[in-house]
Image (cartoon, rainbow, N blue to C red):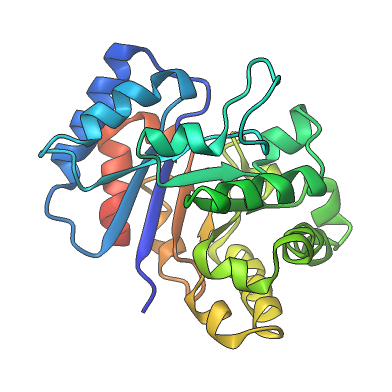
Length: 253
């Protein structure tokens, strides 16, 4: 049985005081949860502090997720951070292909695939995000869009690479809008993704965790996580509120 995973993507939010408050609060509130894996994703600037806090006895059950990285291990790439650097800080997961990276920073499927490979090359686990826009959903091309994004990575890294990866379906139209895909809508795309992987490797398809990311909150987490192919959540705004994020984690436990 796949273990549920809940990841908090803090995006460009946080101060040293807030990072400390969030990690200490989530650690205390989630102590004793045995069935769910929990990761927090601070800004790269706060990764050192987050790593120090998560190394404490009280917060040792929390994992670290980075929000981004550059595909090269080192070089003249001003302002970028590499996978080997993140590994030094004890990072476990790296979010790649988030819709904000694709939409705002024009990251192509090929760029995302390169970041996916770089993440795994340093022993880290990529959380590969796929998702469609409102226009694409209304045009009935949701499945086509997410499978094209997934296939770009499979073609570059191979189907076996998905054994040590996580997928996250995040409909762009439901991120930060307050709109959420119904549990049926979310489950349908999760099923499509898993069945597509199964065409190449049944074991990989059965083992890979597919998270839902699109305005997950305390009110909708339980019904979303109860779906057969939804294995947790990639949580945005709600992850900045200790009580709400802990409630989401409890829904997955």
